[in-house]
Image (cartoon, rainbow, N blue to C red):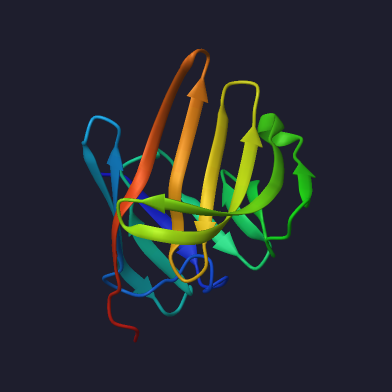
Length: 155
């Protein structure tokens, strides 16, 4: 299991509390669970068990970062773009869109990330977080859709 560290902020887009879980379903019905495992009050960092990534993510008021590279820029605003030197990430908030996943219907922002190695499109819903992700590597594409979001207890 992979560990994801999240700094407290952007509560509306990535709600954080111990025990929160996001269950995602792949096209082949395989399920993946992301869970807020603990909170370090001194460091103001949440520990998230994350099965998809080998290295931790962080979230602060500027956005979602991976290996210190900006992946999603906050606040989410249609047409907002960003580019990074490190990892050559190009991002854009493409549009607002209502989508349906196994967990239900959500009003989302569709965010597209392009790198030399792959392309990711993700849909973020307020008060839930990421509800869908499509990853394209070469000619192969895979999709994860939110099956269930359960809130833990805030401390």
